[in-house]
Image (cartoon, rainbow, N blue to C red):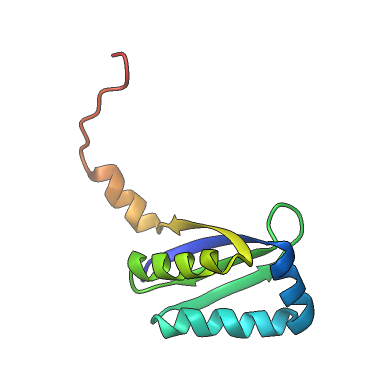
Length: 106
């Protein structure tokens, strides 16, 4: 299954929700939305600094990740970004593929 790194920052409204229901309440909500689409939460951490939450999730396909991302962003409670994560084998396969490319101005 494709893996994704999700980094999120709570909006003021989202922070109020976190204060109301706590970290375990948010974890339960994340688990539900991910598993409902056939995925799995590998790790979830709260942080402070630029990001408030960091997750690693597995989804059956990128469309499932996009569906979650759109729904979460539409809530207005979080600003998120998702980064696809590749395995070593996937990068090895990519290095074996021949790509023809001309850099700008060359």
